[in-house]
Length: 82
Image (cartoon, rainbow, N blue to C red):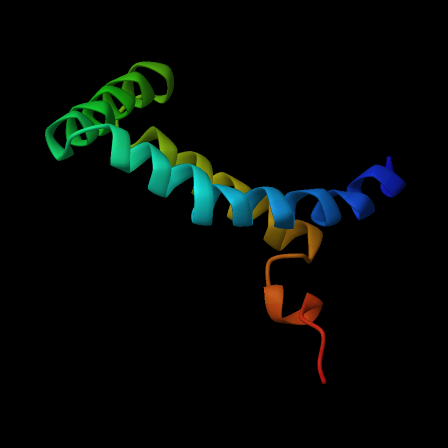
């Protein structure tokens, strides 16, 4: 499991970069601003049904608490120095 977790960033960085530079701009170019807002509202409604009012924020706080307990909350400790 440790090996898989260690290799995850190697896969995820290019994936996230493509989302930010290719996928999301292309997506926004094929739908209208009104459709984009409506889609965001749909996701918000689904999020509230799944997790309750402010559910996403509560889950983020829970993850942060777990990271603190595990000693991995401060990202600066993992940032390479030059």
